[in-house]
Image (cartoon, rainbow, N blue to C red):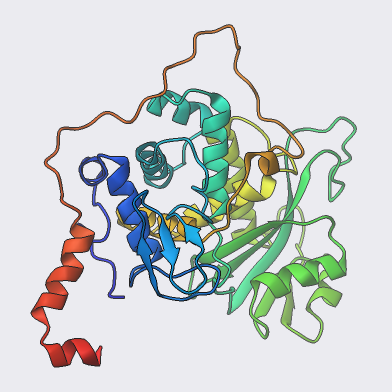
Length: 359
């Protein structure tokens, strides 16, 4: 596929977003185009042969399985209108610090806090691409504790009620930070840290750490290890990159979500922070929406029961009047007539038969 084009493959602004996706049918067609850009492909037998049924589903000609566009994605079995989903995704990527569940509920008039909370967690679940590239070059690695104050906490690497998080960030030359990775880790032993490095850093890279002894067995035989030890209390910061990231993620959690992370959902919030940090220089919010929806249609379904397996979200007062569920209001923009379809049609019409066959 050609490189995504603003105004053709993704909307450039919120007004254009509402123009493109005024109905659920428009949203469904866009998801179909993202999931099967070259036509329907069966998820069971991978045959590219099928037809559309009267109810909008597709039936595979080879194995006979019937499926919908949203089946097998994070939108599977959702009762929330797709127009609400698309605006929620736009708010998620367009706001610098993200959006809280309560803010999303109030903005879109969603009927319950639990629905808004689950929507955001489903979006966060789809942010990590399985084939994403690992970090490389000179990489700073450290751990930090994230969470509320635990009574009797002794500090240091004693976790208490907090969550231990591994941090890895690329150090650019001559200065600056590249991409980062963050993962919840059970402890800071050598085998655990080694697995964190294997999952997130290319073998042969230079690992820069502090004087913590567990990094010696974690890097042995696989990475170049550069150990920095603080000269004293008044000396310079040993790991400026990872320390800066630790401060940023804690400030982001406090400012946007007004809460601490619990272990059950900590990785989802870290996925969101990493997604935002690694795309902090992107000039197009629409392109981020395009990438997010690409991940969403390629991700397995996420059920509500899986999200609340360890902890239920806070509930609003049931006696208080609840807002009525509604779709996002229209901005009265002229219909865009699905430009993502028109663009491909115009390219095919402009090609000669020989050019089309050669592609």
